[in-house]
Image (cartoon, rainbow, N blue to C red):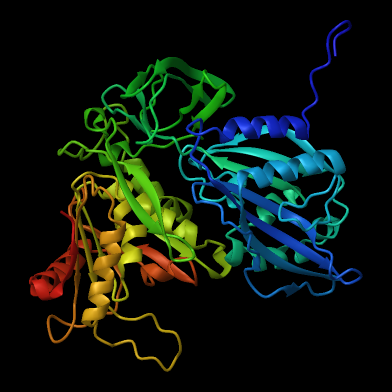
Length: 549
């Protein structure tokens, strides 16, 4: 502090409460009605009935809070070998008022009990708010802990365990941390070993859901574009969008504009890579969105037409972990019909140099999702696998995307094809209506019956939403029509240079849940033709499960 100056205010729990109240105001950053609480709890052998907080994540969501706070462990407890500790992962839901009350109690009595049961905690200190963008070129460690931080990013309010007395043994013995992380990852979809300094902490995550954005880079001049797309239930307001390109400790470009809607162009030359942006809400003095370092597939001809966006969103519902339908939405984009082939005038050595590099680099193949392992030693999980499929839709699904999977059902389609953001893309789903095997004795060649077909139809009718820009048809192979099939493919029938296809390695409903490989196949045109042959053999109402309007 400078002599004669005033010490800055100390950020404490009281400031957390004040900021949380601001963030919870409807339409400021989201439309929240509850918090999903996930707790990694430890139980010491000397006091087995006293749960100790090893990590807590409270995520703001639009789901209504239950009248009574239920509580359950997501799996059988783990006895951590060679330690006096056992662990469990608990999950329940509380209201915003319950969270505020828990913070007030923590501030006054240093006790933490969001559910009414006091947890053992370390010496917690409130640290200033943070904003974590979704992943860009490189993944952010926070996103291995946060829930579904896919869109504009999340505000975090964190209570930091300063002493970490209870968790120190995990930090000193990596083998214990690794084993605990292997237990937690498939249960809670968290990788606690990726951000181990947060063990013992309590994190409140508030994802920005009132807005998303479309960004692009034009090959003709390299200009960087950002377009805010507002939630249909939120009135648009002025945002200050700032863009910068920061490379090698040098600021190579910066621009800033006031934007409400529509594509804003920034004089930050970015033919293919580099810039990041921040969307600032000056009215509420809050960040509404930010990007990490971005990458554009300009040589694939991915360009968004801003005149077709505006309030153009697709509303639909997706299945929750409990099987209930939850509303969601995505912005719909319309790309030009022409696709660029060959070099960009601004990068004459591309794509030729990249093709040489990609052919020799497994890392780059993974970045392009041409060879990705899930499960086993890879550490990749369900959420990452679904995210990778949606990434492929974004890059290659402009004109069409076809799913071919014998176990495909309505929920699988909602989690995948409904997320293809390209308007009027030719979306097709082909299933054999096979039930998921529940034991080794169950046969997998049972034909889809009328009950299955009706159930899938009703599920999609209930979840379809406004069907904006959706052109989707779902057929089932049954009886003696066509032929039986077992392989699973994702096909892009009209990609630049001809059809391309990926072998999924497992069914959509099993993506990321066990070891499998997502791999681009050598001849996508052959896969496309095989799909079409079977599709045309099923061209009657008997095999039609559902079709968009």
